[in-house]
Image (cartoon, rainbow, N blue to C red):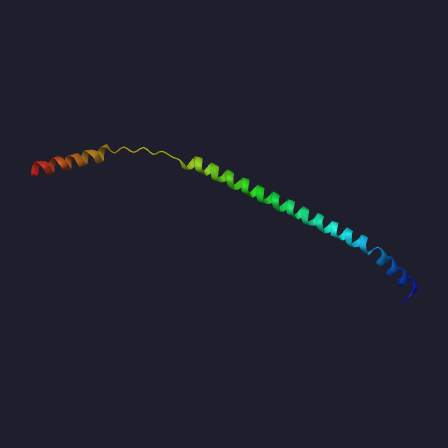
Length: 86
C-alpha cells in the first residue's frame, strides 16, 4: 500500500468510534422523523374519519310523516262490511 493509503487507514481507524456514533445519531433522527410523519398521518386520518362519521350521524336522523287516513278508512270499511255480512 502507498503511504497515503496507510495514513488514511490509520485516520479512519482512529475516528471509527466518532463515525459510528454520528451514523447512529443520523439513523435515530431519521427514525424519529419517520415516526413523526406517520403519527401525523394517523392523527389526520382519524380526525377526518371522526368528522365524516359525526356529520353522517347528524344527517342520517330524518323524520318522515305519512298520511294514512286513506288506509285507515279502507280498513274501517272492510271491518264494517265484514260485520254487516256476518
